[in-house]
Image (cartoon, rainbow, N blue to C red; front, side, top):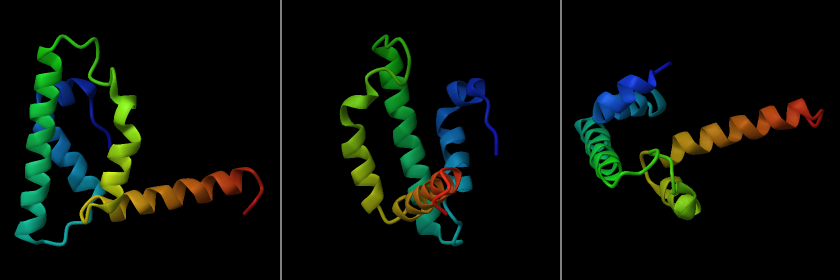
Length: 101
């Protein structure tokens, strides 16, 4: 899965939805599609608001609440399971690369 930064800047909601589609297993329910659309739209609003404030870059200032955001997402029923899978995969790869596995 690849995405261009230009596409993400020009169409943040659409690209966020495509990313969620890639990361979150599609169970075929209307509820999941609606949740992904809702979060993608909220991201678009956040992105546009951040850019209107004249931020140097969309990632500027994000570290302040990153642990709070991670904790929230870990407990979210949609995003928590994929985050857990990614974390487990990364930990396994790190252990193998250090000869622990």
